[in-house]
Image (cartoon, rainbow, N blue to C red):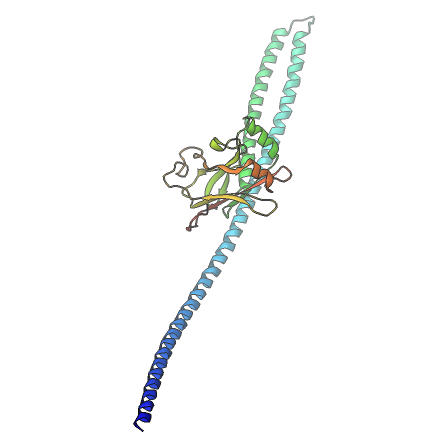
Length: 310
């Protein structure tokens, strides 16, 4: 009887301990559930806040896009009108040059042809005056041609403007450009300057088809040049694989103390990039050149704060 009572007490004690342990586990689970519920509520609130911010940002982006499109249209219309005026002026000057050349030829013939009266002093004087007028007209024509070239460059820069920080550079006739680089005739080629961001940087890129420095003759070199701006976070240069298998790229973070990335004191800073961007053999084995054309993607990231990939 005592043995049975002892066993019963032992079992009761074990049951009480088990119940106590289960109650503790239940309490812990309830606390965990409560914490997770609070975290879920906070997460939902955060999501709602982020969604509100996203809606605001999307509206702002749409408004800015409309404003940018209007600005581009206005700029293009202004450039087009200016180009038409310059072309009209050039045609007028060309006509005047033709007329002056015809008059000069006639005067020269008249001066060289003997007649009963000697008018050659007057003819020579008129010829010289005509030559002066012709020189002035040619000078004006040259100035207009320079202005036309500047306007053409501005149009190229306008077309090359990138508001999302990404620009695709199409390099055609690559075989000829490579031969010119290998012969030393034209070692490098520049992309037309372009802008990143509405109020952003004026930049360009420089490519050495036959390499530069220690990569000369074995690799293709690619460099990035800041022409105007403050500080850029991350730069990525990518050679696009036209077979869409694997692009070749190099990303780097500018060094604040480097002269390449300080505010330019001249037209452009010293180029910074990779002398051995890709091997010459790799260019021809991959899908980087198709129909004698290459594409380079340039990405300028002002906002990225993570580590750049190398």
